[in-house]
Image (cartoon, rainbow, N blue to C red):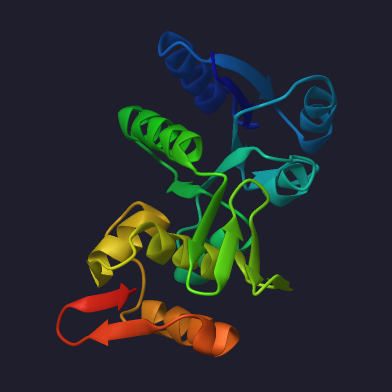
Length: 215
């Protein structure tokens, strides 16, 4: 049985969400604040946490800092691009805006858990080794500092070596959507950053009119 932490101060949203998750067979712990969540984390190990961004005594990021090895889905009423990118760079596995359809959120929970379970212990691509459990990336044995989004992008390429990926496919893997909220050049910017950081250790080939490929 998977254990899920729900941190949400809106009683109506929380009760509906907790009920729906329990009906799906998950063990659910609900907290209304950062303080309550920290107490729960001290006594339980969670597979996934659904965190409201804005809480009475802090933010969802404050809760995330106390979690280790836990998948994260953020809930928020804010849906601008800057906030979404900040959430993923802060380590989010998914991001859901309010109001949301409960069936959609349940599908995202299932997908996130399945993705986490499917992760290999390590992935090797070129001179790069990705230690999936720790989220660390090494180039010829040297630790490379990547942002959460850069890491997720690298993980997509490493999981699809030799395959041509369209921009839509990449965005689906990173954000679980076709990226309609993202300006067209956002993906290009992150690929450029990844190329600059990894240099000759990784060749991200642009397939004009189609997408990208890494061998």
